[in-house]
Image (tube, rainbow, N blue to C red; front, side, top):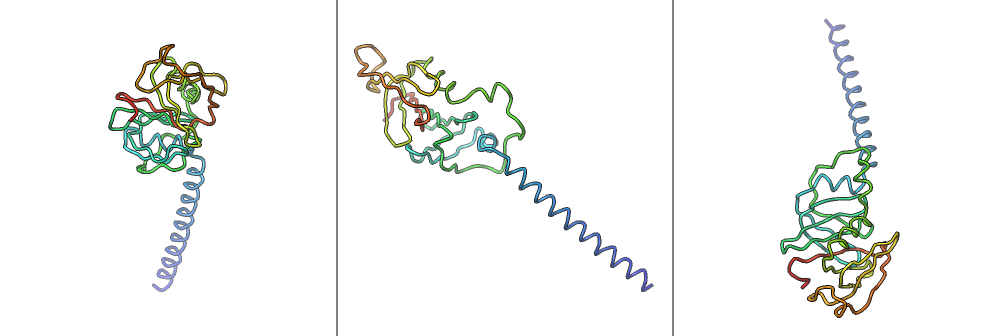
Length: 189
């Protein structure tokens, strides 16, 4: 009887040590996997949810996360405005849930939908925008063209459509200096 109890005790100790080692490996694997998750993947788990983003140059911006690209995210606020934000200018994101988007490589199409392509879509729409630079400067007008590393803005008052007589000048903006591009359904105020 004592031998059976001793063997049972040894078996229990062995089982516990083995379980502890497995828990340690699982935790280590989870940390390693999380270490490979990019912000864009983390944000995909919060699509459709309200979040707040602290952004260099623009401060705190809150809204519903509509889409995420490899180097940008898109928010809708409760006033019908959209915010295209350069991930490089993002400093912190609040309101995230526990979910993370799918891991692994992005699809070929999604990986090509970078900030330049998003800016080209805005230029094609000819919508009035406010461009917030990473130093806090704000420029208003219509995006005309997007180059390899810059975007051209026809500057005009926000309350006027882009017409030759309203354009006060054309400014080339280095894309890496763009923090947020805001479109407004009902103006920018």
